[in-house]
Image (cartoon, rainbow, N blue to C red):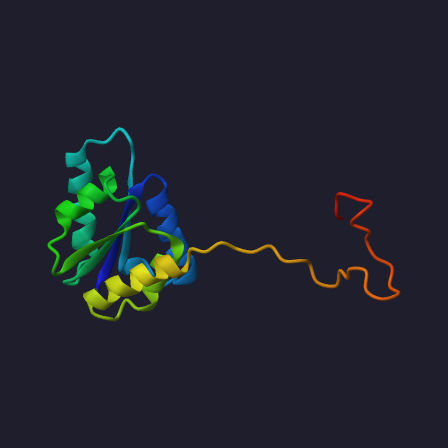
Length: 152
């Protein structure tokens, strides 16, 4: 079962790990997080990440990072070999939860699940009319839109 390492700008990595633990309380041994502070040297970040990767790697690992091209992703790319350690950028809660749900799958399948979870979890949410608020229908009294420009 691949381990999961989250490398992101502080405090996102630890916040995502907390979300993981909230929904999957037993995931502690297979998920690690590294918050990247703005004042840390890249070499120090990489050293910390290697230690955390060694904890979760069994022998495979998926690294989730927040922004492609930023320091956390650049460090993650240094750790990945493309075979037993892979990186997915754009980390969000749906991506993480999908990864945890399917953590028992092979690494390539887990990468596909993570990407699908992330993209399917992003959508515009429509605002609908609250239930039980009728418009002027038949003889029923209602809100006259022509006379009022606000709604309650």
